[in-house]
Image 1 (cartoon, rainbow, N blue to C red):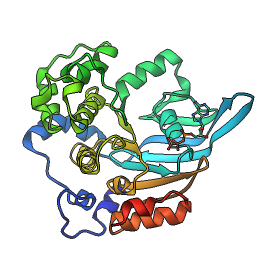
Image 2 (cartoon, rainbow, N blue to C red; image 1 turned 135 degrees about the vertical axis):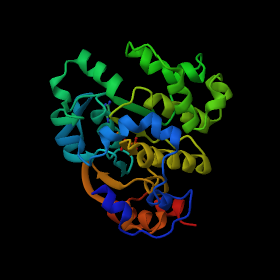
Image 3 (cartoon, rainbow, N blue to C red; image 1 turned 90 degrees about the vertical axis):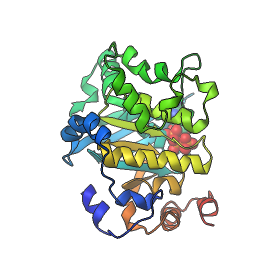
Image 4 (cartoon, protein in one colour; image 1 turned 30 degrees about the horizontal axis):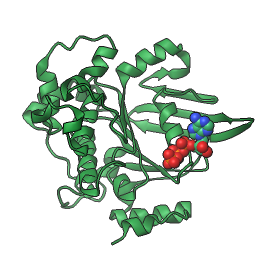
Length: 300
Ligand SMILES: Nc1ncnc2c1ncn2[C@@H]1O[C@H](COP(=O)(O)OP(=O)(O)OP(=O)(O)O)[C@@H](O)[C@H]1O
């Protein structure tokens, strides 16, 4: 289904724009040799994550907040999904549930064939560390560690001894940070810090990567570069990414947009249905009927 979306409009596209995502770039030799085994495992468009009838309630003092109600969502292997919605609509809650950081009040979540409810807290932590990559708005790097140790940190946390420096080096080259590996976060730009965080999210070869507002702390040019990078990870390495964002210009890089409102999915559509991010923004505005001025932010 995803490939159908990518190719249905065809035609030449401008490099470095969301619409360049439909121009599939051939993997470089190095990239191919490093990622091929993973790529081959993940090529089939099969469900990688299934959210079934999930609800989440929080206690706030003596009242209960219903953050999500009966949400269903399937993410295919190799798909890039953007989750949008107004503040408080439940985006982060959905991401936290899908990534096993919190548990649903009801319903089930499966990642890579594993029903998360069937795991004890200890086993869920173990599964999360090995099979799930996380990218945050604030990068969440450890200030006292250089980029190399920040990237390798999930391996240490999962009890895995890094065996091959070449893997780190190649990942760093693909992410454009090969010459920054000895630097600590405070001597890296915001975009470089996020690239280090992306490398960290990939170092365990996770089944799926969740990104919570990955461009939220970056200027728009750097943010678009990070989006382009995430797009390439899907196109060239068949990574599966679920990203929360407020910004239509960021969501436009995904294959599919899911819109949440008041804890429910009210719409989802292929980004290929929209000719450009402005059209996507206008549609989003129409669907959510939001007071927030998304159009004002996006339109020239
Ligand atoms: N830990 C918590 N305890 C109590 N209520 C919570 C908690 N986390 C979220 N909520 C509530 O659940 C609802 C959904 O919150 P959530 O953070 O998922 O929304 P969001 O769409 O990600 O918002 P934003 O874009 O502002 O981050 C909100 O009403 C929020 O106040």
